[in-house]
Amino acid sequence: MEKYCKSLVLFVVCSRVLSNSVCASDYFSECTNSSNGRITYFDRHRVSVFSAPIPLETHVVPIYERLLVEVLKLWGDATRNSVVFHIVPDRQSADIRIDWTHQRRSNNLSRNVGEATLLRTQSGFHVEIKVLLRDRKTLSIVKPEQLKPILLHEIGHAIGLWGHSNNSKDVMFDIPTVDKPSSRDITTWKKVRTELIDQSFHQQAIVALKRHIDKNPEIAENYLSLGSVYADQGRDEDAITTFQKALAIDPQSPIPRLQLAQIFHKIGKFDHAAAQYSRLAGMVRSSEILGVLGTLYLLQQKYEQSIDYLHQALRLEPNSSKLNQNLLAAYHQWGMELIDHQNYSQAITRLQQGLERFNQSKILLYDLAVSYELLADYASAQKIYEKILSRYPRDSIARVGLATTLNNIGTQFSHQKAWATAREFYQDALKYDPQSWQARHNLSETLTRIGWEQNLQGALDEAIATYLRALEINPENPELYSNLGVIYFNGLNYEEAVSYLEKAILLDPDYVDAQNNLRYVTQKITKTLAETGWEQSLQNDLDSAISAYLKALKVSPTNAFIHNNLGIIYFKIGNRDQAIKYLEKAILLNPDYIDAQNNLRYVKGIRNNKFKLALGPVLVIIALVVLLLSLKKQKQE
Image (cartoon, rainbow, N blue to C red; front, side, top):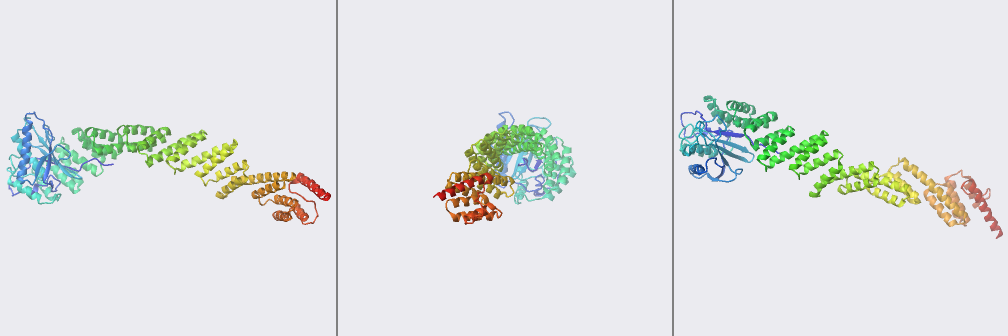
């Protein structure tokens, strides 16, 4: 935010100062009285002059225009064209800006004078001259010959003679009467030009001004000049006291109020500054004053007053970039304050007002979108972010904001258990912000729910595809692996089932659900495969039975019963070595496994017991029948 204000204004008028009666060869010691105590002149050969329209009858205006040209030429000749004036049509670019007026800005002036104001800015300075066209007492138009000395006097100030002569024969005498610069004026001007611009002569100016005040304490301009010198020295309290004295002498003059307002502003006494600027705004309708007042209220976070004054200033200067920047800042900061206080509806109202003037402002559009989001009006927030992106497609803030909004809309649908719609919004959110952890998490959760519902409905292939998509988003989520393992189990893909359940436990060794699932799946797979193997062995499809049992071992490699049954089937097909291997393994896994011990002794030729399979009492009886039939057949052969 830029502060819209100018530096201290320095005020100079022709006044009735009583000076020493003895005239030196020059009056250099007076030439910084009204320029902050510093040497001030234009450091260029050509000095531009703007002359505002002269408010007189049309047939008279050319006379006064020619008078101005004549006065400028007289000073050009006096300086031997070291200074050449040229009149320009643009006020803002001119070094000297002349206004012709019928009204007096101050009642504490001499009878027929002009006034010159030095305005310093960061880039330099310019001079504004008021030419008073009416006699104070008679109110008649001042004749050109009477106005000529006054114009010469004010132009003299503008080119560096920021003080007064004590000799009535000089143009710079406080009440000028001569019609051309004197040799003493020219000598003084030359001496000023030998000094460096901005060279300080504070103490010299203070001594001179105090002397003038002592001799005539009722001249407000001397207090103004002295206050400006104090301000330039950084003696703010002395400057304030002195400006207040000037204001007491001439309460209707805007200049001391402006000086006071600027110092209060500078030292951070914003309430005092605003009070002075407010009085000043009622006296002078100026975009500068209204703009500074608006800025002061902005600094005090009084946004409604700030916006009011900034709008008033912009009506006078609609193209001012600084005024527009501060007005934009006021709407932005007001909106943020309302958001901080959770007054989201009011924030939306104020931000919409700001957008009426700044309809393409990204910062106000951001603020408005955030307000809608906090009000849970996500649809409106979505439109705002999309508006920004339509103009600035790569804007990262808007992309992240839109992703957040789409995620929030997805969450609303999730609460309604509209999982498929929620998924679409989460996916769209990730298109705008692939790094959005909220959208990634929510999409993963939603896919988990969708996949599980597909599993329950028997759409196992779809469920698997959904969970695999979820794993792409969240590959470290053990719950996804566990559920996917269960789905593969339901689809009879036992190897994948066990594999995914084991991955779930690897990611989270304390994941009890995955451990229980793996235990259950292992048992179910083992039982299923064992039963399949047994049925196949009853049908004498021994190769298929071996395949089923081997698959069961992959799932339950420490199951002694399966090793026992495999040993018997290998024995039946004549593979005695494999039979012994599996029977020994069964005993190794379960040393108290009597059936396996008996079977091993039988296979090795020690027939101390009947040959037993490990499938429970009923299955053991069936196994014995099969075994007896097999032996009977061998005897017949």
